[in-house]
Image (cartoon, rainbow, N blue to C red):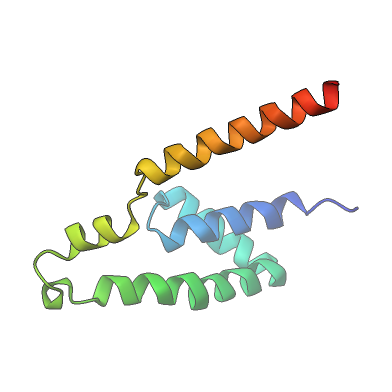
Length: 107
């Protein structure tokens, strides 16, 4: 397998950082130079901006005030892992079945 051109890899890295506004002025200049010199880096940066960049802009423009006041709590409750007595019973039954199988195989 042929490794990536180091300049191309650097261009991809800087393009991703630009998307999140994390470039220093010198890195901005370096990215501009790399994009001018490498068509593949330009294509990657354009694709990245169109994909993740669009998603980021949509999140930034989302009107969180339109959500119900307790939306964070409701989301947290809906995604929380629930471990009740059923989980303990299943774990104990699984352990007992494994132990029984081991004893039967040992005979």
